[in-house]
Amino acid sequence: MTSVDSSKHTKAKALKPGSRRPAKELCSECGLCDTYYIHYVKEACAFINQQIDTLETQSHSRSRNLDNPNELYFGVHQEMMAAKKQQPIEGAQWTGIVSSIAIEMLNRGLVEGVVCVQNTKEDRFQPMPVIARTPEEILAARVNKPTLSPNLSILEQVEKSGMKRLLVIGVGCQIQALRAVEKQLGLEKLYVLGTPCVDNVTRAGLQKFLETTSRSPDTVVHYEFMQDFRIHFRHEDGSIEKVPFFGLKTNQLKDVFAPSCMSCFDYVNSLADLVVGYMGAPFGWQWIVVRNETGKEMLDLVKDQIDTQPVTSQGNRKEAVQQGIPAYDKGVTLPMWVAKMMGVVIDKIGPKGLEYARFSIDSHFTRNYLYVKRNHGEKLEAHVPEYAKRIVGQYKLPD
Ligand code: FAD
Ligand code: SF4
Image (cartoon, rainbow, N blue to C red; front, side):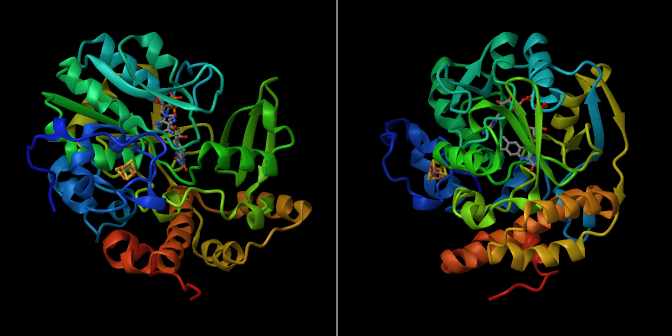
């Protein structure tokens, strides 16, 4: 099905907070159902009606070429590169390229507002979506809120405000629903700046993750699953704690990731105009995927603020991915000293650059494919996009 027809959506009623969503346990709390755009949920929800190839054609004039190895993995694109800000933004997730682009777009009058997510006063990890209208409000949204975030809950405000030019920053499931209702928003121009996203959690799940993994859960201000196969936790006092992936207590963490994220095959945010992540770039650099002309226009705004270099690829992920499948499946935890040693060895000889990105995509797609097959078998065929079936098909999976 293509994007939705015009209709009297303003008569629809948003669901009450806490009530069961149409996608049931697979709901990622993207925020659409908190608005009258729930009218379109059956077509728009990423977990009810997966339609990435149709929406790729709507957004980028074509769907990805499955025979092109880079497009199979990273989606439709004109260009990829590694980049970092010459002067990083203090407190940003990486170097702050996302916040910098948003600020430029606002300052130059390309948009009237920016949908992004700040946190509440009481809790640094509790998401609070806003329409930012000043650079200060954009900066207040910097750094990841590593929790499901209802970014689309402000869509009614967009239409009511009469805004005609808007930038939305978001992750894949939010952007899929946004693209499906894009034509109903009454905008002249929508810009979409995406980040990759994986293994997200509810606020309660995040607490469990921090408590089982970090030495000091209450002082964590920032964390990232890094290319050196360790999680880097930054604490309030500026110290960095590194925990190897292979030492994660997978037996306790199996249920921590949200069911939506265990069923997601849009890690690379296929429908954004421009994607800014890190996993296809060398350590310390960000990874940029320019999907279309709009994305190029957005990146050009900060070209004089960033250093860039070509993307590279090194190593071979396949064996590490294959060996990880049963380990995750059985919830094996390695003793910490073995985990540290494995992390060091893999870091020295393991996949780097785009090959690291493929390692992460393969590991998550195989895990998620098994999850959907076992828990929502009736959805498997329609829910898993063709590119993901091909990626998963490279590996031997348990039943
Ligand atoms: P900043 O300038 O710090 O801006 C961050 C922006 O992210 C803000 O504008 C904010 O509005 C938005 N944001 C924060 N939290 C959320 C949220 N929960 N939902 C929607 N938008 C949000 N990149 C990879 O390459 N590989 C990964 O595996 C990966 N996993 C991620 C998992 C999550 C849950 C998230 C939110 C992001 C992930 N990213 C991943 C993206 C990466 O961590 C950085 O967000 C990205 O590189 C931008 O960094 P920055 O310094 O330019 O962002
Ligand atoms: Fe509604 Fe979004 Fe949940 Fe789907 S994921 S049910 S669109 S809130």
